[in-house]
Length: 257
Image 1 (cartoon, rainbow, N blue to C red):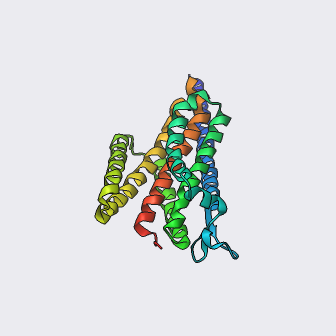
Image 2: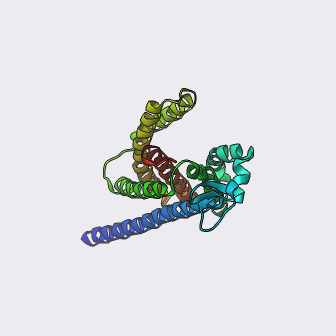
Image 3: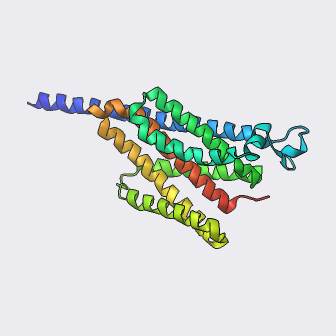
């Protein structure tokens, strides 16, 4: 009997080690997919607006040292800018709704396509903020995101109850932002930006823990076949948390020209 208990405990230890190893691989895939998406976003934004390294036509110049590329000029000088503005939202809904019908490879390509379109949309920040302030805020966001995500992954506290509260906060931010289009209130914009940073900081920790929990619930069950897509959806969630936190921090601390 004692030998049986020893064998069972040993087997449980091997099982736990396998789950831990699989979880690390799953999280690495999530972060790697998100990171590639961020690089694609940066390159797409750079295709529209960047730093001038030589003489450029005056019509492409935004300000000294910064210019719109010919591609960027074609976008912002035509109705195409409205398509670029709303395309990321359509991509998110489409990817979330259709991921079950896609292969893992197709879902990953769709995510990368979304990241590219998001980059085109985010290129407008070069029209408003200085390049140095964009880089500085990006670094601040990256440090904050890393700390929050690590905390969400390592904490023993169950923060799943945050979900409904944070989603309600996001809805409130959207409504307030739409209202402020007409009000043009600097005070409301400041309040929305502060709340936006706090809400997406909370979502970063929440989504990280949710990705971890989802893996632990699916591994070893019939749902294990969905883990590849779950990693892509997890990358999408964290990507959106990062982008939104970056944009709200940029509204607060970015230098405008």
